[in-house]
Length: 138
Image (cartoon, rainbow, N blue to C red; front, top):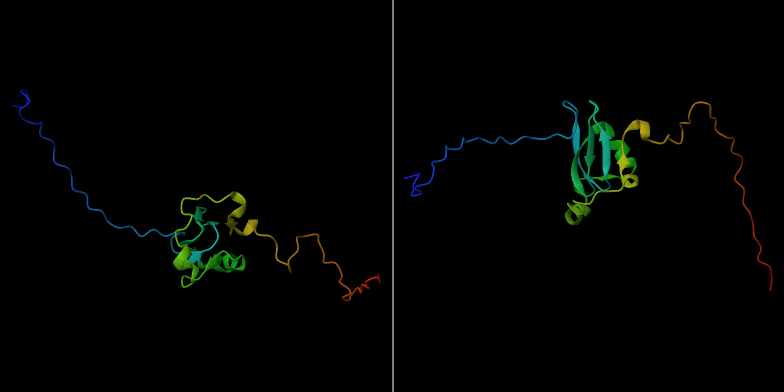
């Protein structure tokens, strides 16, 4: 019947595969994380050297060691932030330009105000000066 076209060729039965949900972590194994809402696009390197990216207006799992850096740059907000309700997922397919990405790697951060590179010294600052300006009469 198969050769006459009266019956279809039997297909082998498909193997049943059980899908197990995987919990993906955004950081190295064993590193403590916190949930935050990304206001700016972020990039950081895990302790194992893996690069991680987070898009703007998305929920992220950020390592605790990087939370102060990200918050100092205004790149994250708490999950309870009001903007999360309206902005979550906005611009999800948009790729941010390189200059807009906040890089949390320590070697790329500018020095703090109190810390100067080796060989530099702070200039002495004198008293505050005020300048008075008198408008000429017309």
